[in-house]
Amino acid sequence: MKILFIGDIIGNPGRKAVSQLLNGLIDRNNLDLVIANGENSAGGFGITPQIAEELFELGINVITTGNHIWDKKEIIPYLPTQKMLLRPANYPPGVPGFGSTLVSAPSGETLGVINVNGRVFMDALLDCPFRGVEKEMEKMKGKTRAILVDIHAEATSEKMTMGWYLDGRVSAVLGTHTHVQTADERILPKGTAFISDAGMTGPLDSVIGIDKAQAIEKFITQMPRKFEIPHKDIELNGVIIEIDAESGLSRTISRVKMKLDK
Image (cartoon, rainbow, N blue to C red; front, side):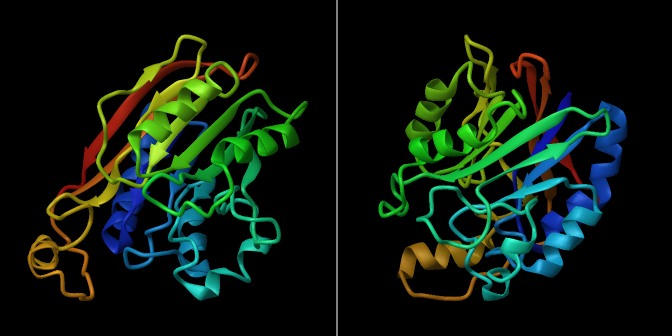
């Protein structure tokens, strides 16, 4: 089973990259499923039901999110109705939506997808992401051995710890949130694919997706302002993972870094 995981989709430029590049990636790589982090797909902050449906129509099977999941209030009533749009599993009990899901490939193979949010340098009041993953894995027992985990976290140490913690028990642990693709992709000793951050799908002519002049002004003046997303030098970032569905372990992981033609 071959899976494409797309790093954080940023606003309209990121959605444009998915629209124009995804079908070619699916065909060239014989992909079975596509998972994407879409928590910044609505103007750079949050996601709306309309944008979620747009991404599904483009060929994305499951959308993961993170700390910006609540930014667009209209997403709240939508979350309980759509099992393929995840919010982090380690929000407290009673929060609307799903922290994990099962998705079937055309071949009939099943992939479990789990979404958790880190706590280091983020929201320390969230429940433990490690215990959150364990709870979601328990739900999948007997249903699939192939499980992909999106850990949406600031600290590389927290993401790497999750990789080692789950090595041999899940197919892949993939980091998101920092919007910079790392070069540490590998198969861990017991068979789990890992990367600290899958990267960003959006404008490289920016500061993690934000207009660079505005980011400079913010850092220099510390004054609040509304950020905008530039539309230059757009790129799709992610990883392709090949999973042995029988064992649930990964055979290969390779980075995707593909520019959108002007």
